[in-house]
Structure formats: C-alpha cells, structure tokens
Image 1 (cartoon, one colour):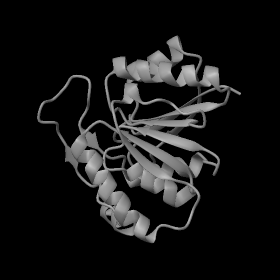
Image 2: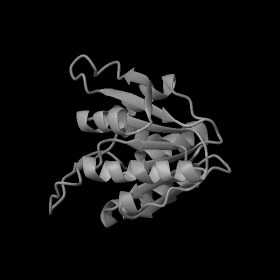
Image 3: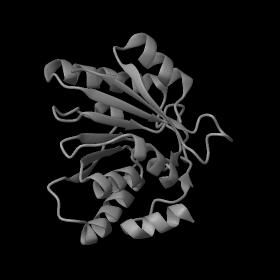
Image 4: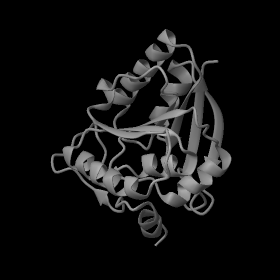
Length: 202
C-alpha cells in the first residue's frame, strides 16, 4: 500500500516487477527500490542542491522522481529497455504537471549503462543490482576516468548490494566504504536490505 500511495502522490506508476522475455545473464529484472527503503536511507544520507545523481537501470523512474521531489536535485536515469524508457517518459509528463518549480532537471537516456558518457558534474551514482559485475566494472571505470578529467568527490550508492559489487569496489578501486544504512523494517528478515555508500575524491 505504501508504494501505491507514494506513486499517487508523485503522479507516477512504478509499482510491480518485470522479467525480460529474452533473459540475459548481464541484465536483471525490473524492480523499483521500495519507497520505505528510500525514506530510511535519505533520513541518514543528505543530497545537496548542487549534486547531480545518475540512476543506472532506472526503470520507470521511481528514484529520479523521488529525489527531484524531495531534494530538488538534478537526476539522469539510464535505461536500456525501450518499453521502460517510454513508461519513464510518460511518468515524467504526469509528474511535471504538478512538480514544484525548480532549476533541477529530470532526464532519461535510453542507452546501455556502459555507453553512458559520465558528465563533469555527475557526482552521485545509484545502483540497485541492475546488471552483471562485468558491466558494473566498466561503468565504474568510466566514472573514475571522468573524475580524472574533472577532479571531484563522487559517491557510489548500492542498494541490496551483491558481494561481487562490494568486493570489486573494496579490492580493485580507490573507493572507500563511508556509510551503511539498514532498512529498519526489512533488515531483520533479510540482511541484504541495506544501502552502502562508497566515496572517492576530494
């Protein structure tokens, strides 16, 4: 009920899961981060209006709309599925009718995550297990290359983190774990119900 009410508040439709017809070993099914989990996390993790967040595997756009509404932060959603991308654009049209006036943008790009060109001001990157470790490694390399060209502090935010994502960040990158946030109502039943934040840079 919580998710449906939140969707109604934001004038969007993001509830439900979706399996892929031609399942790939590299891409996981669509499932949005629960609003309850987002509420818990963002009580403990602050976004500033100058931040620019990229949501890899954004699906129908729940996280971008939530963040734009709550923090007035610019968000880019990356989605490879044409169908989910179209649904995100429909949600955007509905959301913007009632959205607060803001200089922050929401935009969606239909492309593979590893083909997204990280922009100089992108500094927060969100992952809810959207794809295989091989793709994740390439995306992280792209982020680090961007940081090399434009020095800044960047955060990697993992929800429901997998051991291979964590191991890669801890052993093969300069990122350091700075925060862990458990989802209060769900963590006891499932210890994967948490967020981890890794940071690198100034």
